[in-house]
Length: 83
Image (tube, rainbow, N blue to C red; front, side):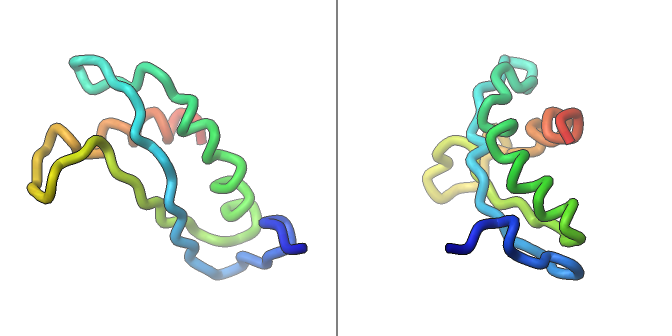
């Protein structure tokens, strides 16, 4: 059985689909970082294994149109703090 710890990530870029559809207050601050913390073991395993990570997520349901209220940009400070 393969696990994330059995891979050699050295020099590889890894695309990871994460669920960062997190609740935020009216100022765009993350109010519950549970989903972000849940992704940390995978992210850290790749980074500590010498790889780099490209995270892919969504926020809300924009119904096929660009709407800045669905931007994941406000999640970045919460992720940076936890990393």
